[in-house]
Structure formats: structure tokens, C-alpha cells
Length: 335
Figure (cartoon, helix red, strand yellow):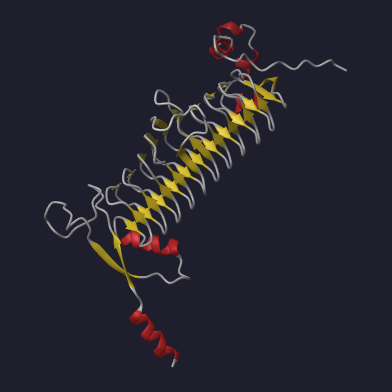
């Protein structure tokens, strides 16, 4: 009796139509040779509706193997969105009308892309991630980026000087890993933009505010909070729960200790720490890890060494007009 009932239920299982997009033109695939038009804008592939206890990830993978693109039936994909080749869009995702997705992107369940947003090849959006916003301007991500669970990227800034209707921009490079609950905001005005370079690791619950300019190969530990207009150069490392005042500069190869409040510039190659961050000397371990030699650290003719020349220039720049000076040096009494 049970077997007969299951057989009847399988025959009655509903069918769901899904849209398979043309990877070259962004139009859903049509069997007609006619040019895309309203009647031919959609073609459909009919698949059995997934059981409630089925593995959606396995379903996506299996279907993606059989089709160039896979869009889950519950996803909301605007017909004007441009979708690359080999893209997988999971359940309950949203892709807006002005979105461009590169080849091989994967959107996990409940991730969303809004506004005028371009995402490069082979990017991965984890569940709950939000990229872009319905604002004038643009959000651009390069290739091979990972956007973590419930991260919010490319939304309106929290600067009260922002005027509704102004264009605002965010540009992110390649090979960045942006972890869970991180927020990165667009610029506060049309003449500026928030920029993230390449190969950065931005750990969970970090915040990068409007108009920040982040270089390459940086590591931001959890709860690193950058206010507006902060400049971070290359190969810097922050420990957890640090705060950086607006308009500060963090020099290349520097280290910011955990729990620090940075209210002035951090010179290149240095280490700072403290409730009001103070200079504690050179970031010797960081310099060694990045290939600097003992000769460069200890040579008596320091003025001839390129690294020292750039450090001196970094110090001079921090005292230029409209800059905040450098973190104070901590003096030890010797007692």
C-alpha cells in the first residue's frame, strides 16, 4: 500500500520552470533562431521540484554539470541582467536589472546583487551576502573574490555629508577574501571612490568606510574598523579589535597591535599599539617575513638603503598639510 502511494505521489510531483540564460548575450536561451524579442525572451527547462529535504548544493552542482548555467527556480533574476558562462545561482538569490556577472561565479542561497554592479569571473558569494545597492554610481568587483556570509558590500555610506542622488563608487580588485559580516561602503561623493586592491584578507566583522583606499596584500584581523578617508598601503597587518581615525595613513609593512585606537599616521615598517596607539619600534618580524634582510635593518649607512629612504619620506608626508602627524613614541623610564 505504501509503495503504491509513493508511486502516485511521484507522478503528481509538480514541475517548476527555470530560466537558463545565454552566456554570451545575457538573454535566456531560446530554441528559436529569431533575434531576441518579447515572445522569445524566455525559454524554459522543466525539472522536478526539489524535495524539501534534498541537498540543494548537490542539486546545483549536478545541474551545473549538465548545463552551462544553473538558476534555481526560487531565484529572482531580472531578464536584463548579463550572466556569464558557467554561473550557478542558488535558492532565493536576487540579481538586479543592471548587474553583470562574470564567468564561473557562484551565488549560494540567499545572496543578492543589486544596482549597477559588475562582478568579475569566478567570484563566490556565500549565503546572505549582499553586493551593490540601488544608488547612482557603481560597484565593481574583480576576479576570484570571496564575499563571506552576510557581508554587505557596496552600499550607501554612513557619512551625513552624502547627498541623496549623488553618484558613489566602490572598486575592489582581484583575489580578495572578505569574510562574514564585513561591511564596505561606497564613496561619499562623486569625485571620490572607495578602493580595495588585490590579495587582501579581510576577516570577520571588519568595517571599511567611505572613501578609504586600501592597497594590496594586507591582513585585517576581526573587528578592524576603518573610518572614512583612511589610506592603507601594502603588506600591513592589523590585530583584532582596532579602530583607525578618519584621514589616517597606515604605512606599508606596518603592524597595529590588538585593541589599538589609531588617531595619527603609522609610518612604514613600524609597530604601534595602545589605547592611543604609540610607536613601539620597527615591525621586525613582519619585515623578516616579507624578505627584508638584517643588513637592511642594521646597516650603519642607513641613508643609502631604499627601505630607509621610503620610511623617511613616509614620515615627512605625515607632517604635510592636512595630515595628522604620526603616532607618538612611547618612552620607557628604565625602572
